[in-house]
Image (cartoon, rainbow, N blue to C red; front, top):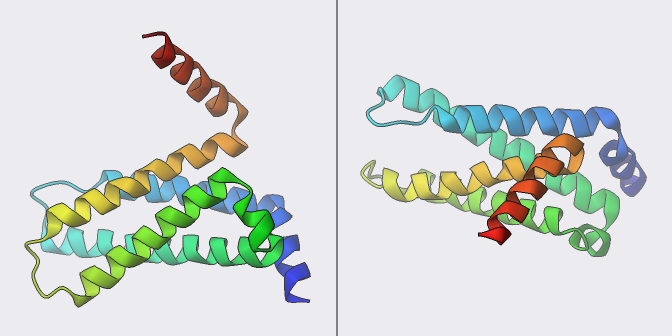
Length: 142
């Protein structure tokens, strides 16, 4: 029963659209990070980043449950996304365990990996996928 529910959810256009919106929101929030930044603003960004990590973890769980581990792992986008989710969870754990706030450089590097999630949009946006293909072709010609 859980398999069918998760399969139906992950196949729905609403779920796909919600995940595209989540990627866009996450990318926007990550782009707001800068130095110097006020403690209040940094706290808000961290809270939103944490919430987005849980959204993407939920997406991964729904997709693994709905597709099954074998089918899920056949898609390289899913493997990439799972890697980003695991790195984001590791970042949250380290950040929670860390008592020092002087390690922001390391966290910025981990956060930068999450920006690569924007490439997942290529799956659902044909024009974006074509643009990426042209960019890759151009780089190959250099």
